[in-house]
Figure 1 (cartoon, rainbow, N blue to C red):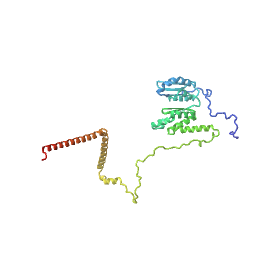
Figure 2: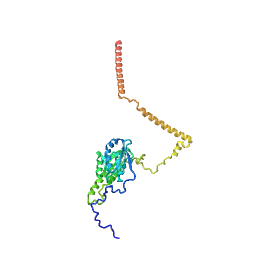
Figure 3: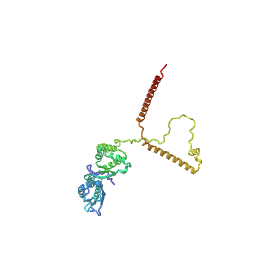
Figure 4: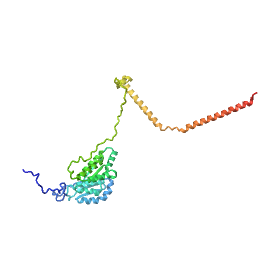
Length: 348
């Protein structure tokens, strides 16, 4: 049998896009209307109520073009979509489901409506359960946005996707290849790999794809390979052994005494079980008393009035002054007594 693999195919030309998906028309649905109604519903937060109420006419018009019915329940806080008798595209209801999901996650209505077009998909990435610590999660989520949203804008330009970071999720809209890149960047960012590395890699890949000579070659030699650096501090051991050089002795070090040997030396080994328990209890109570005394001293320390420096110095000065004055008065008295004696008993 002759091979059909290498036969000429005049209809297969280079201008044909083999990956193109043709639009689904009513003629393609040969089975007719659906036998059962399919419906999806989702809840939305309270703060989205006013916006959804204003944008609902636009959403209704967009869904009616695909023959999909929709309802907005403000009492329950829910949105629902359903198929009708005129619906011919089975994928339309799935796109409508994604539409209400995006609307509940704060995506603007004009942007969310683009999900109804062919070639546009949606990916909602849950990021909260990827990081345990709340502070670390907030910091890493901020890395996706970057300073003034520059990192997010670069990702959108390189992946041709719309990305919205909202709460514990990241909503992305665009082609399938771009969504795959967005998911990889977001998950790696939550695993402490900065998005700038992926952005550099994507920029290089885009340049290489435009080069016709390197288009079909291996690009590993052009892509950057970043080494992982451990910046965490070295853990210090709990018990630091003494590593100072000691004088050399030919004799081995003395054997450490075991627990039993220590008990024999203290006499605890020969005590009865009750006496041992009593001794342990006494030691524990003594430690508790010491701790209580330390705590009491630290508490009362705050209420002890501080000693003022000026008081003691001034008292000493006053005492010295008094002593000096007393000395001067005593000297004057003795001089007066001497003069008086001389007048009373003059020399013969």
